[in-house]
Length: 388
Ligand SMILES: NC(=O)c1ccc[n+]([C@@H]2O[C@H](COP(=O)([O-])OP(=O)(O)OC[C@H]3O[C@@H](n4cnc5c(N)ncnc54)[C@H](O)[C@@H]3O)[C@@H](O)[C@H]2O)c1
Image 1: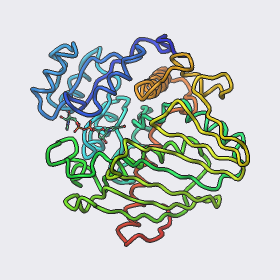
Image 2: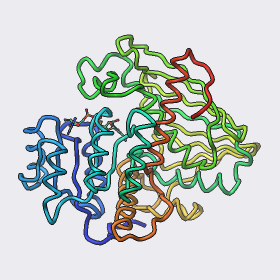
Image 3: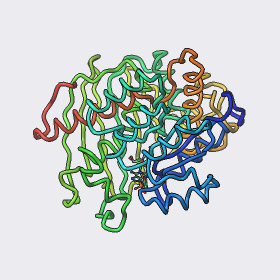
């Protein structure tokens, strides 16, 4: 159980790039990183508007001298300080992730980067090489993966509870962008502009989340080929899609599909991962993250509840409150930041790294790879393409 005890040395001196006032995800990073005392926020280049960024830094209690106009100035100035930053989180629009992550690694920093990590597999692999050379941790903010019942699903599938895996059904299909809300929302506007969002909208923004959860639940499963079709129902979003269907064939003979959408009118979130085996199925839904549905063919369905003694040890190790109470997305993110801190601390001590229980650089690369393959298929008219 996590009770705020630090299992690392002194708090990791941490900064943020992006995540400024009014941003969607900035506070979620701060709340998660600061919750267990593993990180201390000491610097930031929080905003594309330097004055607004400084203002937020001051309101967060930072030394004004450590509120910087941009990431390059911050990395250079912090490198000159004996108490300079050791890690940075990057919560800026997608088009900046590659350059800022590269600059951070070159400055010797650990990184937590938002998804998608970058635009191309070539860029992602370059970052992986750099991270390995510099022995730095790169975490990727697939925050839902910190929900503990994801670990329960992984353990049950590994134990063979479902039998042979046949079907993987992924979806992340909300309705919040059913109309052209970007006309009034800067946070949505860049998401539908390829210069800032990259080669996709919902595939990268939404699809990479359940994709990563499927990688956690089914670590041995590799995609052999896929077919993707994507649409821009709000026409002004073209060439970027606000809806996409992807069919996948895995090398074991299992098949999968992923529905990503921002135009699923009326839906709140609908991120679901359903794994169907020859004997039973599991389903996890992010709107009810404390429950895991376990359905054995021919028997009454069961609902496994977070925190209960019948769960796998790795599905309860990060409990923060007794069962019966709801843990939510803030707890899931805190769990990930806790794991990032342990990995960064181990790297700084030169200790052997445990097998990562967090989305690291490999997960970042695989998310970009999936988007790249989906776009290649869709842009050829929705044809099967070998996965590469
Ligand atoms: N992991 C998740 O669940 C999740 C959820 C939402 C957003 N995101 C990701 O987080 C990132 C940010 O998304 P958002 O919705 O918070 O965007 P946003 O537009 O709401 O906020 C972006 C913030 O970054 C700042 N910024 C932009 N360029 C900058 C730069 N060069 N230097 C410093 N600051 C800069 C802006 O001023 C703003 O404060 C995106 O990559 C997005 O995909 C992830």
